[in-house]
Image 1 (cartoon, rainbow, N blue to C red):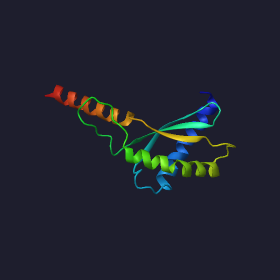
Image 2: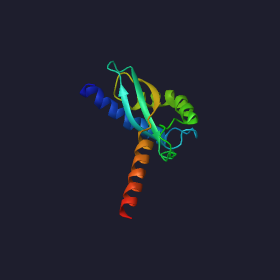
Image 3: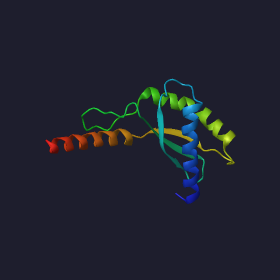
Image 4: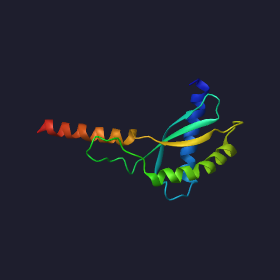
Length: 125
């Protein structure tokens, strides 16, 4: 990514997170965190990576967490609204199409920290 696309991606991440938090009223979405936005070089498409804080706790198995289908449906439904709002507030000539993709990094990180804490507690005894 060029410096320009990185700058645009970070601005989109910030704006999308604010719009989802303050303006989208779909109850299926809940508390969603926008972790990253990847923008294509031609600025026509973008992938918005998201995660949920409420579902950060994972079971003890080693499987990678999966996206909640209800949240995915809510985000897909809200994508056109979010894009319209971005077009209204953005100085860019063109706003990229938004595709929401689940990012398990928060849940995996939370599980890793919990296991490290368990190991640390076991070593102190």
